Image 1 (tube, rainbow, N blue to C red):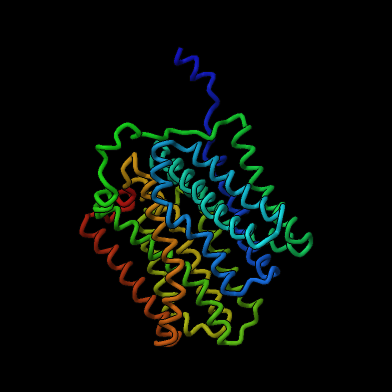
Image 2: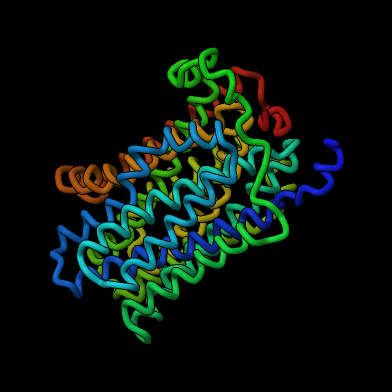
Length: 403
């Protein structure tokens, strides 16, 4: 009887279908940030209020990411992912229905929290691939999809706002999210997977503090945090540096586009190439290249030098995300993977809020070059520490570094 019911049960979504769900919703999310901020300005919001509105995208995920992770570990992929996609759909349909300040605040809260639920559920499901090689391929596909959707979303939103107006722009973005939700609910394959592994053993599980006491797991999370700092700092440094040197807005955009193109190229490389190098080699390259680029950036007054530095920086940072996610899943307890991802999301969101303020303060006291060189020193120290720990642990070859 069990075999008959299993045969009748629809197959689960494969890796590419899971990535496609995230890509469609990421297009909606990144486009919504543009649409929400510009719509707020047309409604008379001050610059400070727009900043608060955009911060709301990250506030609720930061507060609830660990709880979301626990829910995903307990309930599996389907319910959290479908709920998250439904929240994204509603968050975009509300301002399409009625463009008021209250709807924009509500939309920001729903979009940020809904996408975070989907993201954690999909990342946890991808991490459940049966072996390291399949996991590496899954996260490579995920990284490539995120790089593409991160560029497409703002482009779609900008064009829709210019050609069709605010409410229709929100409706168009909602179409991407509704397409994903409909495919997940009505498709022949189920949005499902082996979740809820330890639903009956809550009392015997170690606390998250005990889980994070694992030095290997802390090492991965710290490396991931440094990579996120290097990534977020770039979006602050390039416009400031470009303005100081008289670059036009188009030139600043081209420099940042070079970074984005390099990220896309790095993530388009086959997973086998990353496996041959080893995940920790990819992470150390990201930190070392970030250190060198930030060390040289104050001297990049000419655009060709800036293009070259941005390309190297994008290659390093772009190739690191799949490696970080693969290592994180390999080292997380089997029944706590989504919860650990929630801890990661909290750390990344906090750094994204604190970093611009910290960099601004350092630039005011130390000057632009001093602030950038401080970052370069931090990244160089991080790369050196990762190398020392690898040598101390005897992980000098790529194969050993993947586990």
